[in-house]
Length: 236
Ligand SMILES: O=C(O)COP(=O)(O)O
Ligand SMILES: [Mg+2]
Image 1 (cartoon, helix red, strand yellow):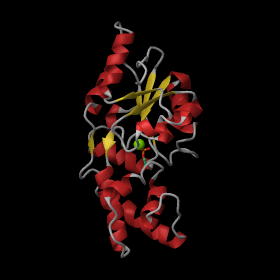
Image 2: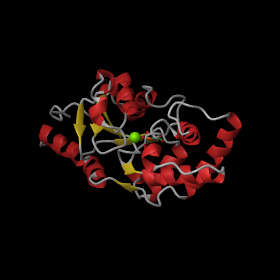
Image 3: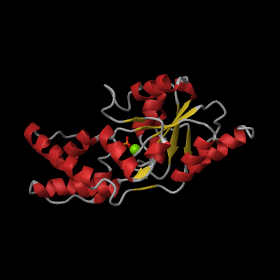
């Protein structure tokens, strides 16, 4: 069982995007398959492509071209593939994507408590901003850090350290909420709290088997964060 959600020390919330705020897998998969089709390759199943998401678009394109989680595509093929994927995905980024249940309410409620909420994603910034804007969510967040915004992306501590600096809060007073090992590792590296969601693209039970990737606590809805904040301090 997951421990109690204790947020009394938390002053800011950093959210992962794909698999945490937004269910984006269908549009990602359609674009990856459009890229493969344009290059004369067969489509890959959605479940396979889902396992390729989480380390940014560059890696997704390598994996989708090779149908292998670890392999790298040859340089010229990757460039061609990346251009095809990026064009298709930018144009179709929110055809099927939508926020998970509890996201809009949860984020709005946290903001009503004057708690800053930001996005820390490995999605390239231009795409993250477009996706949030198309879903009417962009204005909810005081900051969007993409995978290419800084010199390092998750699992590096850098994105959360940057958030701490911009918001002027200690990194250990930030909660990072995500669906993947990269979210938990980046929270650990920055000294932030690591909160997992149980509805995203990675299996929190599997991640819990390794102490490095075990979330401090696992939630099933973003609204739980608001409930916990109110419980910790009814005055808030
Ligand atoms: O673009 C990706 O690979 C994953 O993005 P995320 O960090 O928002 O899950
Ligand atoms: Mg994610």
